[in-house]
Image (cartoon, rainbow, N blue to C red; front, side, top):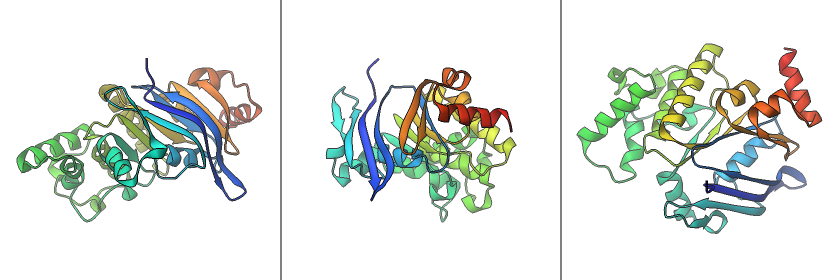
Length: 256
């Protein structure tokens, strides 16, 4: 299968400090890849560089367009980068309030992404918003409620609906269950697993939680000090870690 995203030698520095260095991998359609590591390992820097939110210092990022041709992301101007983010990509932030417009209703949050693609029929927009609220387990009767009236878990589900309503080809997720109660985390993870499968999404997710990686991802990258120290099939990495850092991460989970 042809790759959707091709990453070669991607690096980003903050002065003398390494954000991420010489990262290379391919991401295929329908695949969810997890990037794991402790705080400061470079995983969020890598995610933001992949998503075009940070400019890399070196390396190559190529994205396969619908016609099969490659798009060199480093050569895109700001207008085309925004178009790509609006039409073909999605980003789910750790704090859902950062990914929502708090001053408009839940329904408007979902419909805005469709309006950005040219949808204008009010009835159809509202009907789609109601369907997506139900799809992410929010009562459609709350379509006119403001996001601020929702719990943290419901806000995250609303952000997921807002992100996925346009059926993007590639989604970036930054610790989407961090800070939520354990029971709420489980529901969000089950929701993400179902939607990723149903929509056939390609996704890159950052997490510090190895259980999340095992549940969702076929493949995992382990980062330490800005570098990928181990990569491969998730179950293989977690059941038989080879790098000392990965062994430490796995053992810390087993002993807690």
